[in-house]
Image (cartoon, helix red, strand yellow):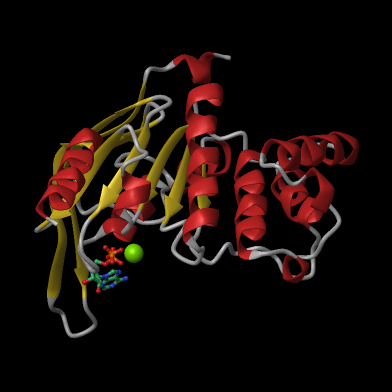
Length: 247
Ligand code: ADP
Ligand code: MG
């Protein structure tokens, strides 16, 4: 497939995002973000609360418009696209995994995963088969007919990842995906993300507060004063070992 052969997945240049508050006051959230992300990279985004991490992810996921600068996602310039085209990119290039899983409570795991495929017009028979395949990839083959409330937090997040795969995405955006999980379950989700980037060449951009999760990424962007600093994941490992030496 042509769309899978692109080596650059996301590129932003001098990206600016302001919010206008109801009183007229302007909030400068992103003041010049430059990023270049290759296909299949596992990218971490860190930064203090309120630094604009979710805003950045929402922009890349086409859920939010930019104020100025350039953003290209999967080869498409998001600044100069019509709503219809942004919607198409949202449905066919990317998917989002949330901290609170955001599953539909009255649908089973399998039905939750089938839903995006049905919306894309995939036949019932194919959606049925694929939903089971995706649940198998995330290690939930034995839970396909369970409702979300009958699953643990980690299992629910796995269903959400299977549902993300049902979009056949080039890119998965994950906003603090392990924020509601215990350390062990969080680690399992991170390992699943690693597998998807390496084996399926899906690009994953993950916002996280957790240095243990961040250490598993290929590369990190740290948001500070509306800009991003690039940091190699390796430096986190070094910082942690220095801390240990001091103790
Ligand atoms: P983070 O995810 O890093 O905690 P956010 O991206 O959620 O940060 O928010 C960054 C800043 O932008 C915050 O100060 C927040 O209040 C502001 N903000 C986010 N969304 C809006 C909005 N729709 N209108 C006005 N301000 C917003
Ligand atoms: Mg956030």
